[in-house]
Length: 156
Image (cartoon, rainbow, N blue to C red; front, side, top):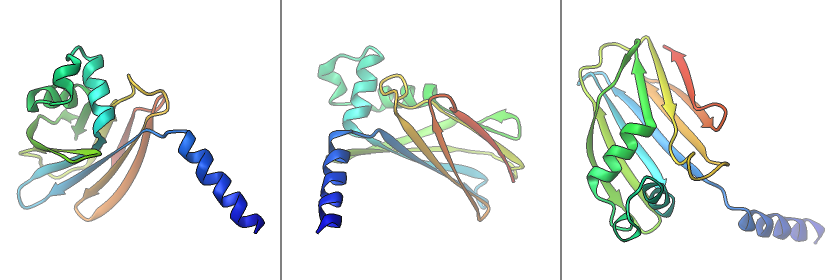
């Protein structure tokens, strides 16, 4: 019974301390020589960030593609072999709690090293954590980026 009480206490205390998290998946498509990026953000957190950027509260709830595209361009910077990747915004999918955003970087030669800088939502939440999963030619690695460590470079 003591373990059950401890578990209940843990779950209740975790619920009273919100966490802030984004997940970014970066996959290298060797056939197309492109980086395919999927970003999962909590919709209300993204809306808060867009409001902080100067979007009015009325429009933040109806985030336009251009608002999200501009935000991601500013907050996610990927460099491959020393050259910044220009991403095309493919669109977003807004679900009740999360927003998925999709990007593609084309004409990417074989990747020797990749640097990821992720500043998403750090301007809104001090405890924001940004997880980045990379799949580069079958080699998988993950990064945890946050305030104080917003970028990391990996060799492949």
